Amino acid sequence: MKKLLTLLALLFPLTALAQIPASSNQLIVVTTENWSDIHGSAQRYERHGDSFQKFGEPFAVVVGKSGLAWGKGLDPVEPVEGPVKREGDGKAPAGIFKLGTAFGYATSADTRLPYLALTASSECVDDGASAHYNQLVDGAAISKDWNSSEQMRRKDDMYKSGIFIDHNTPATAGAGSCIFFHIWRSPVSPTLGCTAMEPASIARLLRWLDPRQSPLLVQMPAAQYEQLRTRWKLPAR
Image (cartoon, rainbow, N blue to C red):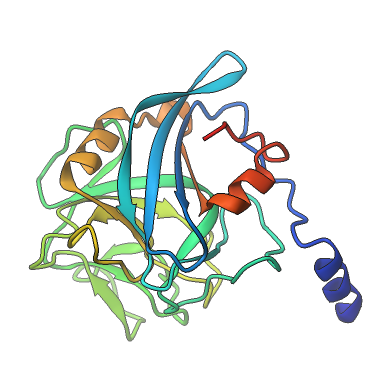
């Protein structure tokens, strides 16, 4: 049976029926030139009637140091056409993803998203053996069952403002963890798997995003976006 499923995946490289739900009225579309490119372009969209219209101007982003790979998002994808996201691979996830909690160093933020004020004990767990894998936690408030995590209150301020991307949620060990929108180190510095941008772009996203509109991130190389656009009911770029 396993061999048969593998053969079918090779014959039909993208078998997911992923598409934008009717309840989602805000999209952030991020595309790169190819799977290995670290630079991308992001565009916001709002639904008007039966179609999505561009909102605001496009803005620059950087992605993982190794580019993109199919991740675990809104719907599963049998990603034979392209790499698959794994823990520690330096790739940002491709696919369609919900957006989770906003976070930052300030006690509050100008956003309608749920907001977490980071402290010195805020961590994101990247140990796949932990029951808290791929979760933002207060390491001082719970019993630790992990050997590795990312400290969220950083000296370089990249997490001074950000948004948790619901990749690999609920979590499968080894499929990748702790994926965010956050502030970039520079326009030419890639991430370890997140999507980063200048502070002003993060601030605009925080003000614009409305959880009542079920916002989504759509992220993938441009060629795959065009290949899937009609099937997944994605807007024209």
